[in-house]
Amino acid sequence: MAVMKSKNQEDIMKQAMYKCFVFIIGIGLLAGGCSRKSSIDKEVVSAIPVEIATVKTGNLRKIFSFTGNIEPWRQVNIVPDVGGKVGKIYVEVGDLVTKGQILAELDAETFKLRLEQAKAGLAVAQANFEDAKRNWERIKELKEKDSVSEQQYEKVQLGYNAAKAQLQQAQVAFDLAEWQLRVSVMKAPFAGVITGKYMNEGEIINPQMPGGRGVVGLMDFSRVKITVRATEIQVHQISPGQRAEISVDAYPNRVFIGEVYAVSSAADPGSRTFEVQIKVPNPDFALKAGMFCRVEIVINERNNVLTIPVDAILNEEGKHYAFVIESDRAIKRSVELGLQEGTVIELLSGLHEGEKVVTVGKEMIEDSSTVDVKGGEVQ
Image (cartoon, rainbow, N blue to C red; front, top):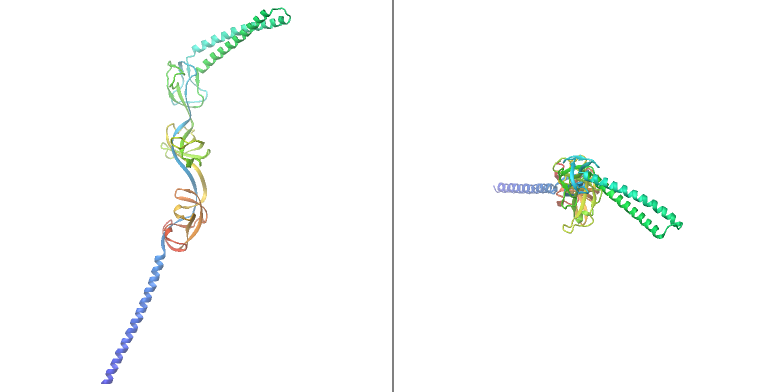
């Protein structure tokens, strides 16, 4: 009986030891499993989510934007050089005219009479001069032979000089009368469009009267000019010959191409800005005087260059870097940059076309960090 009891106790102890062993092994396996899961989770967490963009070839421009008003290339109010009654006006507002075309004329009757009078006076003066000239030549011959007195000689000489002066005076009077008749006819100094008719036939015009607008207005619209104002930071980058692109609300889908032709060397004392003048060809007269316009002056232009978004660039101590995706890692590279237009910048060196660069999340990664592309150009 005592022997059986001892055996039962021994069996119980063995079972207890076995359970304890199994428990210890289980704890160990559980701990090992947890450790592996923690390691896996750690790797998953270390893959930083990023968004990317592709290095591409494109065109970039640097532009300065302005607003302005369109003005005719040339404009003039047609005013005769002499006063008188408007006899005839040959044009109407909107007419296209050529250089030298007659636009209007004064009543010429008075000017014609003055010319005839001057012509007659010139003829008389010419005859008197010829007579005085013959007398002068004869008296000189007699003087050489001592056949005339000094008093006679001087009298003929004075008569000759007076006739010569009268001839000159008559010639000037004739030229003046002829000029008055000529300028009473008003001609177009250049080709253009009649933009105003300010007088009627029969009205009197006096070119000396202040504030007069003339008979008609003429503007040259074959090209137009635009004046914009640049700051002192802008003006040193603007020069004649640079292309300018002009847009107006009247033609929303059309861009007019012009160029800078003059840049002021002195700032306006009030605004501290510099005047920049632009000329724009206008062969179809689409652009009208007074139109509001937007102007973009092309300062620099780069075609077929590598480009990346500005968001891909990191600036560190004056140097520029970008993170390039290689497999599942972001590799930090030094880059050189060029011209920037908006959110895109030129890439001079450091990357190649087609490579992927990090645009969002770059501040959270380091060189060779594992990344998980979540957006951008690749979903």
